[in-house]
Length: 182
Image (cartoon, rainbow, N blue to C red; front, side):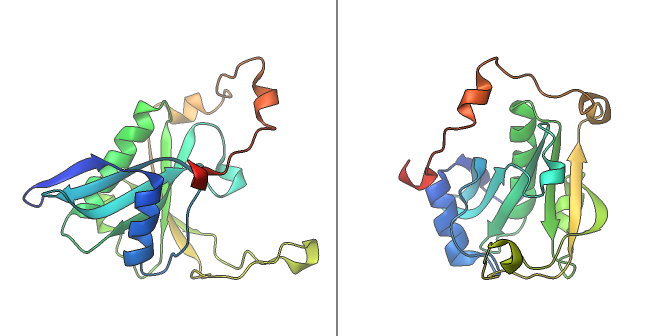
């Protein structure tokens, strides 16, 4: 680990501002998150990770989260410490699997160092769907990505059962919040 590199709590607003300044290909705010974590040296933020629900609907099994953004200013080992913290936070919240994606030209060495496995090529393509009225401007690479995963030893057994819910939770599904106002 780099000298003095530490995990620090951050807000989604701070994470979004850091990503705006430093990320190579993702811009704009990310609102669908569960938690964010920062890496700092001597009180100076050098990296962030944003963890949320999986973007792909097929991966939303109730036991899985996704590192939706990971970004550093280039500080050595910052990505590794962030991925490790993201996994610990995911498990602490009761989830059993964490996924993320890299571009094919990215090495994935930080992920491998933390015990993640490259599952293979996934995704890619545009989110623009004019035929169903969902017009989008692609502000990110639309090439295929590599999916990485880390899971608890019991994930395969756990995922067979749906996560517990409260009786009145169906009413909560109708609630919506604009996280930019929080």
